[in-house]
Image (cartoon, rainbow, N blue to C red; front, side, top):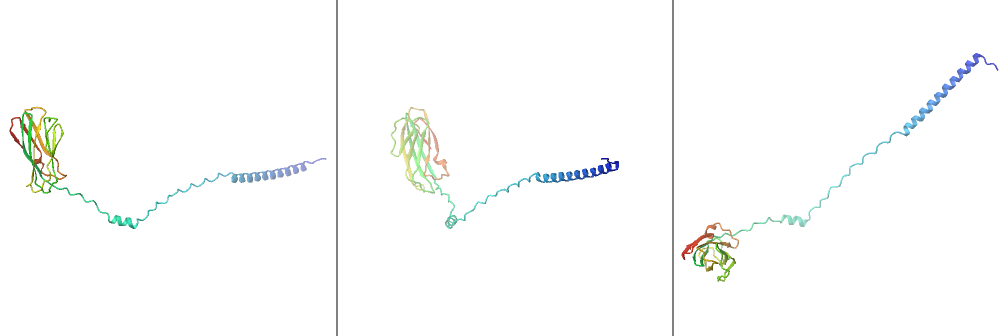
Length: 210
């Protein structure tokens, strides 16, 4: 079969048109596929952050009627009233050889009466181990003797007398004696000068007054 040049050109043109159409169809197909894929592989959306939990406020129970009554009836404590007394000690001491004589007169000038007072007598020289003391007196160590006076009225007219002799461990030339109040029942004493004494006694047999 003989194909003319014009027919060949016509066939070639037709083939070109067909190829172009096929290429266009392929491009459209790929675009559609890619578009679908783009939609399919789109990045997933991030999950929303959970809302912060809020704890419910603690419920406050209303006070009961008994509690309200107790609160209303509560009274502030009242400070205890401390009695006041003015205790005084006066007397003398005498030192000779190994003996020490002690005389104490105790009074209460008020304003409150006292059930009793404990008088303390101390010496700068050690006492002998054995002492002969009144029933209301007690040796607590080698330097100290305590004595009870009994009740004291507040008018100062009542006085209690203590009289005893102490045996010293040696024969000193002098001794210092302290006389004071150890206990007065818890009363306040605003004049301690007349119940707190220090006296120096020489071994002369003389009375040294306080």
